[in-house]
Length: 144
Ligand code: DQA
Image (cartoon, rainbow, N blue to C red; front, side, top):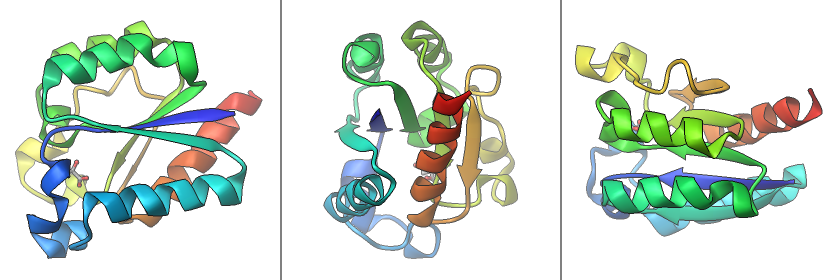
């Protein structure tokens, strides 16, 4: 099965963001790790990143053409982009929300997710390993 792994705003500068929350790795390293998890779990991984909400939404519109499920980390958009929420609904695929940091133990604005209600599952606060858990949750969704 095929997973589309989507990163949103500010992930292209991941290595310049607070290492205590995000681990200090580059976005390229993050993609490599996730691709490796995919090989381990026998899931084909495709990665997409954009800092533009419209481009991100348009990719969600196309997702069902080439993927069976989505791992999605929209960054700060998570907390306020109702457009991305609606686009996940349009995609019509199982979608697992993933965050590197433990959003539920940070500032109140990060404890809100507009994806609630359209996502299949959520993993947060496990760093890069959380993407392995996310792929595992997708596999479980595919088996249902
Ligand atoms: C994040 C958490 C968000 O609150 C933040 O805006 C990010 C990264 C995470 O992976 O922990 O950009 O999604």
